[in-house]
Amino acid sequence: MSSASTFHTAIVPAAGLGTRFLPTTKAVPKELLPVVDTPGIERIAAEVAEAGANRMIIVANADKAALADYFRPQPALEATLAERAKFDLLAKVRRAPDLIEVVAAEQPEPLGLGHAVGCAEGQLGPEDDAVAVLLPDDLVLPVGVLNRMAQVRAEYGGSVLCAFDIPREQISPFGVFDVEETAEPDVKQVKGMVEKPAPEDAPSTFAAAGRYLLDRAIFDALRRITPGAGGELQLTDAVALLIKEGHPVHIVVHQGSRHDLGNPGDFLKASLDFALDHPDYGPALRAWLRERLG
Ligand code: UTP
Image (tube, rainbow, N blue to C red; front, side, top):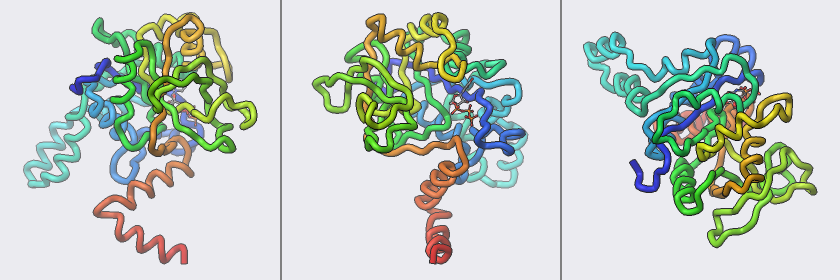
């Protein structure tokens, strides 16, 4: 475990309906769609493991049991691959179960992201004084921001969120933080948050990304919020309540890029980005793209 780690458990809320990926999501959870050769949820699990946590709670509904199943060992398949000396495939099959312990929690109805996080509380242990929350739609690159967030929690206490500095004219689709500077250029104290502002109304250019390191106090706040935007119990409303009550909340402004895996257009960009760097697929894809684009 990394020395700065102040968390052991990550919650991955995956009980949404995935409407932007219909009709595929009628039968396949979007988190299992392969980004090149690896499902998005495995990339998230690798990020959690890399941050030093040892447990990942997947919050899903009864139709998405395949998500936790993906992390279970498959002894019969593994034995067959070993008998046939397919050791490279065997390594791929073992990768997910070897990464991290995965447990399932159920959100029977999609009542909102805040509600989904609350559904994981029963799976926490006494040692979990903070939990990471990762939105599986959101790939944050390069991997490693959770380590920095854990350092910031160790330094300032409270809860820590991840942000990107976005050009003001592109800020409108995001949740935007109202902040005060700290002595560290990549860390800001959060005073408030505005959802999807017009560029001229945005309190900063720091937009929320799908990574949170939340003090356990969040669960008490989640019990006290009422439905917000879209009639859903919103995680950001619980964070706002904590801020109002004097709980320290900071952001880490991450230098890097992100991919949204939640809709086909951006999913394609992510796939291309990873495929172009892939030693097996990259060179042929690059040549084909050159030809295709004329
Ligand atoms: P999104 O709104 O981006 O995902 O929620 P969605 O609802 O699955 O997809 P669309 O909008 O219908 O296409 C962000 C994250 O929160 C989870 C989702 O699974 C996603 O990972 N979530 C959302 C829940 O777990 N439960 C909810 O009630 C809502």
